[in-house]
Structure formats: C-alpha cells, structure tokens
Image (cartoon, rainbow, N blue to C red; front, top):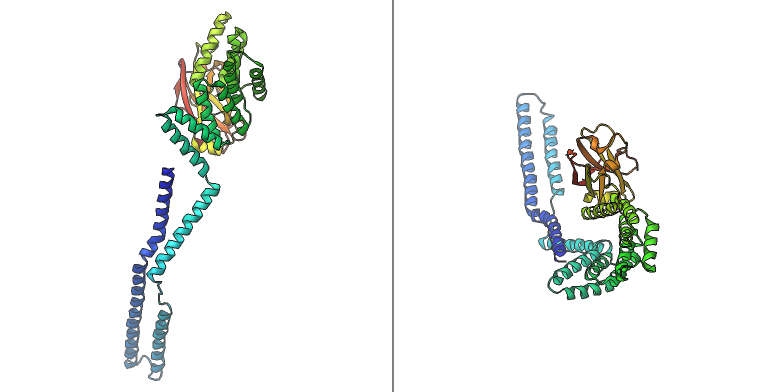
Length: 407
C-alpha cells in the first residue's frame, strides 16, 4: 500500500499549494491594491488643480462670467469630495495572519477527510489492499513457497469472494499436482462469477487426470455442462479432443481439434492444436490440414486499455484481411466477441469469403479488426478499430493487432 499512500500524500501537497498560494500572495496583493488606490487619489487631486487653473484662466480671459465662476468651482470641488468619499468606502480590510492560517488548516483537513471518506466508500480500497497483499505474498513466496501457499489459503478464506485469489490458488494447486484441490478452487470461482464453458472445461480436465485419465461420471457431467453453455468453446473442444485421442478415437479427436483451432486463445495453443490435427490426419490417411501449406496469418487480437473500458463485452468483433489499397471484398474474415479477447484467430484460404477470392490470390494485404457497436460489418461512428501495416502474403506468419482507435 506504500505507493498508494505516497500518491495520496502528493495529491494532498498539491491541494495545499492551491490553498496556500493565495494566502502567501495576500499581503503583496493588499499592498498593491492600496498603492493603486493612493495613486488614483493623487491623480484626482492633480486633475482638480488643473481644472481650477483652467477656470481661473477662463475667468481672466473672459470666457466665463464672474457670476458663474463660484458655481463651476463648487462643482469641481464636489467631484473631488465624492471621489474621496468613495475611496474611503473601498478601504481594503484584511484578515489577521492567525485567522488565515487556521482557516487554511481547517479547509485542508476537511478536503482530505472528505476525499478519504468518498474513496473508502466508493473507491477501490479493498481491491487495492488485496492486490498489494497478493504481491507481498508472491515476493515472500519466492523465498519460502510453503509460507506463500499457507498465507494465500488464509487470505482467500478471509475473503471468500476474491476471484483473483482463488484463481492464483487454483493455478498453484494444479502446478503442484494437487488436482482435487485445484478443481475445488475452480469451483469457488464458478460460485462467484457463475459457470462458463472455459472454467468447467478446466475443472473437468483437472478431475480427469485426478481420476487416472478416465472420463468418470463427474468429468462427463462437467463436459456436458460446458458443451451446453458454449458448443464452440475452444477449451472444451480441446479437452474433448484430448480425451478422444487417448481413447484412440482419431476422427473424433480431429473434429474437436479442428473446431477449436479458429478460436484458440494464444499462439502456443494454436501450434499445439495444429500438431495434434496433423498427427490424427496422418493416422487417418487424410490430406494435410487446409492452410498448412498455403499462406496463413495467426492474428492475436487485443484491446487497448481505453477500448476495453468503453466497449460492450457482448459487441461483435470482425477480423478481416483486405488487399493492399483497401479495394474489393476481404480475402479472409473471422468473427469473435469482445468478451473473447485477447484471442488468436487463423486467417487462411479456409476463411475466404468467396471461392475465387482467396488469401493466396493476392500478394500484399492489411489486416483489420473492428469492434462493431452496431453489430454490422460496415464501419459506423463509435466503432473501435485497429489495423496492421501492409503485410506480404508469404507462408505462415504471426501478427499482433491491437484495437485502439475509435471512429
């Protein structure tokens, strides 16, 4: 929490400067205002003398009557008296220094107290405390892993709805081979966030290996539940393909893995799936996977921080490859949702939209990714987009693409 306190202290200092600076300048400003007031009075006296001298000159030269002279002189004197009276009314009253200092202290204390109250009630204090606690646990765990695990277990018991804590604990359990406990930790995440096909598939995989690589009833129940939630979930399909492979059901493994490949979440998963598919296709005496020998882009699509905050997780994401120059229909396309990101998609001739307009038919392309807020492929105001530089179509390539610009 030390960085947080340092940040709050710096903000308090900045606030104090805004409050203290006018007080520091108060005396100088007061002296300046008094000087301006005195200068005005002196200028009025000089003007009065000039007007009297002009009246005397006009009287001597006969430009005014002697009877009118007293009245005109009285008018000039009245103007000087009125201005002097106004200056008395505008005398600057300044508070004493003790009063100013005490007022500043009270205002600063009130601002800090009110800000802290608001931050404690509606801010992210609990989340920050949990984050810093987890980071401290990780640092300590680098020296004593047993102590790390014990403290992490105590932390999640004290905060049973902390998803990040349960996620970290699940990963540790699974890495240690404590599969039953890892599955139980995943169950806690499901309890908090609700069921998802990905979490159910992870839980099923942990219990599958815990039960001796057998699809026991509890494993099968989790697979069925995950498949019912999302029949296209790559984690579920990958796991089902692995089970089929171990049962030497090559065709089932091929079907599951080929269905998972377009939505694989990262490069390592893509490569693993492709290796498995090539293996089972060879066992079945089939041709290599389409796109294995032709051009292919493995595009990892992600959102910038701003885009992730300002887009609807349910919005559709279109990824498409367009020939250089931006003319003509895309030569390959795929579709995801914002909730799927970051994700890696395969773009090859298999994803071409027209049989005679494929990726292999062009030489240079630009890859686009667009969050369609209106749900249509046509760009609209408010959509978020990202694109690559011009790429040469040559073999298999990995590409990173960030959606970071709003239309």
